Image (cartoon, rainbow, N blue to C red; front, side, top):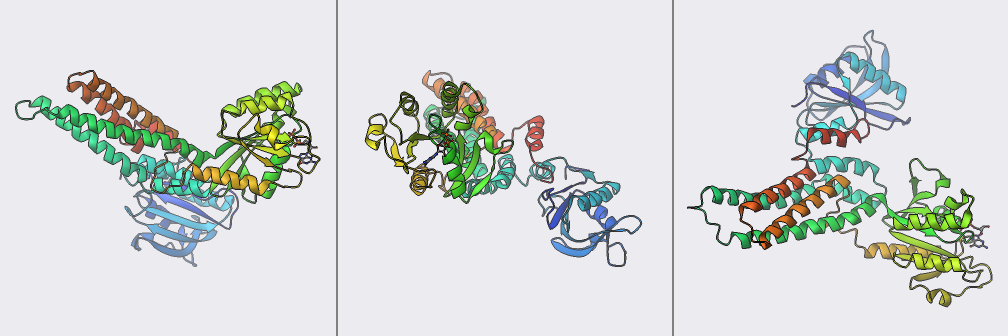
Length: 461
Ligand code: GDP
């Protein structure tokens, strides 16, 4: 084991629930918990005598045998635990205060409070998880849709690792052969080597490019499809957002740090997560209404994966509507002909003269057209094929950057081959590609980066 320290933290949410779990990990785990764990008569129970993966009933008591709580303790001996160290989970009654008391007692027994992510960091440093798996732990916890969860679970089970290892092995063999041949040119021939490298690099680039392309879908899976609602003031954008939220029973959360007014909400459509962004309220909070509205809409549209354009069918098409229609041409989207409950002043055919997007008659007031809109969105998202169990969708920005670096190095090898450079030139770039791939699974990551990665974790994880 790498660590001398024994650590502890509450692993469950800090809100009051019916039970809480305190996790303890490290060499002194059994001794420390035995110090505070008693039977009904206040006698200390020595947990060291019990087998791994057993559960024991008892009480947590302080030095003067004051009862703190009635608990269950769950024993896991190294290496059969999350951290690969001795681990005990104390299942106590829910409540911040009880957990604090128990943690205070553990501190007196020489245990220290774990840093955020420290359990997972130990799991990584003790070789139980690679870095891509460790990073997926938080994604599993924070998953907001079926697809996001499915994807992070696959990562947690080592799917990325398996793929990266195959690619790295291939590079390593070539580098090893190349270096051996350069050392011993009399016995190891480099004839045909260029063709071999060329075909390998070609294969590697195809695989890496595929992973990079899929990582675009990975972002959509993890963070949701950025869906921007645009249209001139008063066409019913806020009403549409309200209508989608009210009707959609699967509202996930307010986006952290925002309120209802700041206009971003997550909803689920089928297996997908949509982040709805309403540009309407942006100009409502400003005074120079119209022009700022358009400017802000433009800004949001640039970041959009999908656009819902709202028009008022009770009014004829204005210059401003046409401007909005032209702005969305380049993007995926749909047009809603809102206020269909009012007399029609604008026909579908007229809109189709300016846009080839699907037009859906809609009434945000009555909720009419909502099913058609959701079916259409669902179909569109399913067509993007983000749900293949065979594919790897990298969702992590750090891992994606490492892929981009790998691609760069492989392209350099390709260029060297085409320029007829000597073989020893390939080795440097191939080694760089090998190391960049290693960053993904944590084989070539510097200590400070590891620190940074685990700091973003929550306490007790
Ligand atoms: P925004 O400025 O585009 O966000 O528009 P709002 O959602 O604030 O709506 C502007 C006005 O149109 C409000 O008075 C809404 O009640 C009304 N409105 C919105 N949708 C409908 C609809 O489908 N039918 C009718 N009759 N009125 C609507």
